Amino acid sequence: MFLKMLVMKKISTLLAVLLAAFSFGQLNAQTTTWDFTATNPSWATGGMGTSPVQIIDSKGLGLYNGTTNTNFAAWGTTSSATWAAPNDAYAGTVRVQTNGGGYAAGSSESTPTQRYFFIQVNQACTVKVWFKSGSSSAQRNVIVSNGTVNYGKAISIATATTGFPTDGGYLSASVTAAGTFYIYGDASINLYQIQVVGATVNLNPTNPLNTSTPVKFGAINLSQSNGFVKVAWDILTEINTDKYVIERSSNGSSFSTIGSLTATNAGKYAFVDNTPLSNITGYYRIKAVDKDGTIGYSNVVKIGSKQTQPDIAVVPNPVKGGQLNIQMNNLVKGNYTAVLYDATGKQIFNKQLAVEVGSSVQSVQLANVKAGIYQLQVTNGDIKMNKTVVVQ
Image 1 (cartoon, rainbow, N blue to C red):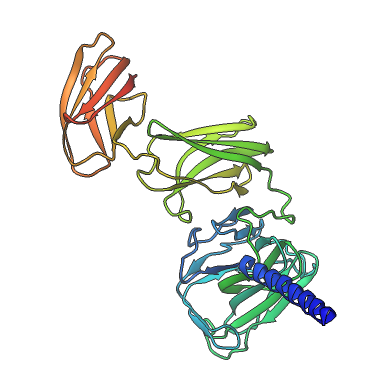
Image 2: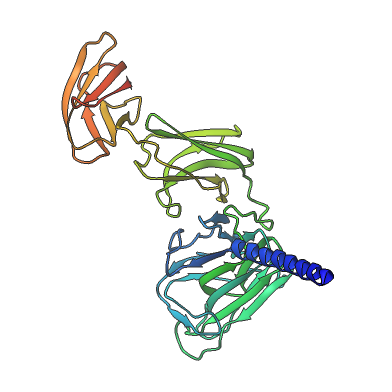
């Protein structure tokens, strides 16, 4: 009886371990989807042009085109398609065009050299691709490989229609190991959706097939002080780099340029955002632009608004051109008085400001104010805020 109980206990323990392992695997399985219809691609509608360029979107999808390409990854809504079970039902209206094959004629189909997408994952997974032929009369293949051997290959369904075909191609490929894999066609194809199931996607993937990318980023850090955000980054490798472009976003996906710095092989760079986003999380990344047009990106970093008390900032500071811009953060609606004092305490000007929203920027023209250091005070009787202002 004792032996039977002991055996049952061991079986129960083993089942518990297996269940825990299964549950852990389930919890850590992730799905990343690029549905170009649900969210339009973040790059230009005209694609990447003809220069050799590499870009990476905010979810870790890399794009690379070679020197002979024309408008790789151009996208639009000129063709729609639907997929039915068992090919994972989907309907798409936005297509991303490769405008050519991923490898040159006569070379191995498993090693793309032009016009390809790349993704880096932390473990084995499944990649799914919804696509159509880029021809009105010919079938085309989509290939997923690790750059040496194919993980999967699928052909579009034949069609006899004219114009953009209504055929829907679908590929489900098993990526057998962690690392970078590539998605491309044997000729022009249109992609509608890409999905990675069961692995974490690296937001800053490496691309072993592109040896021309000269920049390797180190740490990128954000700090907030006196209403400004300082963006600082380290460069581990810098060869033939032209400039660094600082980009900012309010949602982590759609970025806009806020400034740039010339590459000087300094190793460390810093940029101050004088007009950061107010009261919301801000996302930043650095775009490295090579002299031959190659582009690389740093990781995306974010900073939350730390302004919880009423505060003011002068943007930019030093003041140039006689225009004083006062950024007001978390102020209650009402009338405020802005006073500028010189070093002796003499009042230089006094102006009434009407604040309609909690955060705003008020512009004041400084007439006949000499260059120097001043003290700005903004008050409404209950709130008093001071800032040092440099006038050039």
